[in-house]
Amino acid sequence: MGGLLLGTVPAPPALGTGAGLTAVAASAWQTDASVLGLAVAKGKVYVGGRFLKVRPPGAVAGTHQTGRTYLAAFSQSTGALDSGFNHVLNGVVWAVVASPNGSRVYVGGDFTRVDGQVRNRIAAFDTATGALVPAIAPRVSYRVKALAVGGSSLYFGGSFGLVNGVTRNRAAAISTVTGALLPWNPNADNDVYAIDAADDNSKVYLGGTFAKVRGTSRWAVASVNNSTGALLPFAAASAVPLPTSGCTSRVKDIETYGNRVYFANAGDGWGCFDGTWAADVATGNLVWKNSCLGATEAVTVVNGWLFKGSHAHSCPGAFQDGTGNHFLLLQNPANGSLGPWFPNTNAGPPTEVGPLVSASGGTDLWVGGDFTKVNGAGQQGLTRFTNIGPGAAPLAPAVPTLSSPAAGQVKATVQASLDNDDVRLTYRLLRGSTNTVVAATTVSSAFWSRPTVTLTDTTAPSRTSQAYRVEVSDGNHAVRGGYATVTVR
Image (cartoon, rainbow, N blue to C red; front, side, top):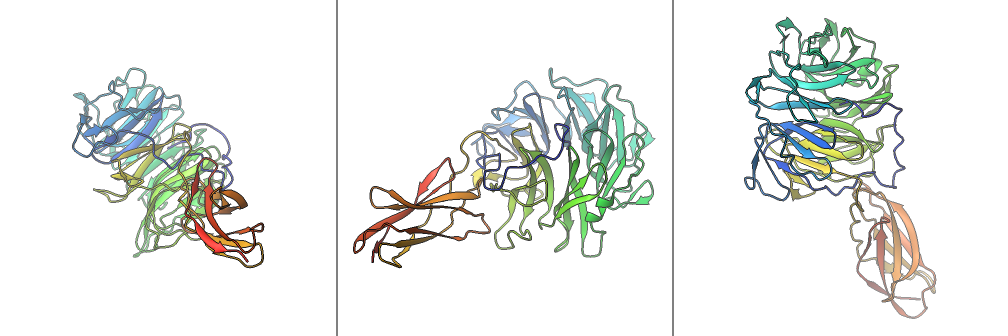
């Protein structure tokens, strides 16, 4: 999915000042099966997938349902169903993309009919009226899995071999003006899972499970000319290991944003490359590579961070196996390091992967997939996060361990707290029933690193018994733990 605006790589906030998104999921309708495609345009979110029905937030599966066959639209601001956008498709929607100006939404998938009209695996809708666009009706012979708009071209990839009766192996393009088939022809020898055009449409990127493009070896990723599909130099492709008997890593998603392009990989095989990587659009050189394990399915730039949807279970330099799967993470787009944002989903049928697709309207993040819970609460198929509200509250601190190392001094220690959208938290030592602040410090923590916080009261009354507790604050919430007592020397 392409970036919303031309520009340079955004500078993310410094770690500890917040993620620019709250970790508290905002209200949104749900689906009764997986979401596979998302796009935001003109105040609406267009959602495609395997679902046949949608339901309000909080409704349990099978209740309060409204029919929507594989495609629906929701309000970007409220998450509520758009009752005016209701089309009947006869097959799964695998991809959704909006035009840069938001006037159109394109969908691709397995369908051959939309509202009874012939639409062989690609259709377009006018976002102002919700109507089908008559000119966009190519005859694609099999599944369309990925879509991207660049200039006046609609690029698409998948498993097909023919478009309008003309050979186009797994990648093709049509005119967004006339709907005519274009000469662009990368000729991939296996499925294309992801496709995106540079923001200036200078080139197009392909990802998937192919081994050759135009007869030349290019495993899983390629950069090609935007009008012919001819291969371009792309040194960064070395980030993806060549397949072996124990490892096959494929590109699952591509996000271009300004002068960077970001890739999501999923590997099958223990220790096989599952992470993310970034390349320079102009030079094709590798910028960074993050080798978290746990297949990455989606990447989207939002609020100066790179979002990744995956089932990461181990990330070198951060957390290791034993902390569970972390399906929602942010990365610094400058170097790939993890950011301060730790909400989570689960993984549900049929893929048992979790998040599968994501999109942003600029200041929000929409996530779709096969999950049935978000932050432990029931929410199937679709969720959203915004920059509105105070965010998540810190975990309440434990009762402190107290000692009196010297006359008039009390030392308190406590394990650092955890906050799902802030890593730098302020700790205050409170004395007595008046909760007098006698010490304060700021400490960084994350779910994989919760250090011991030490606070010392140097004004404690000697030869008295005093009660202390710890308060932790993220700037929006202040949470207090229980009291402990000590006799002051």
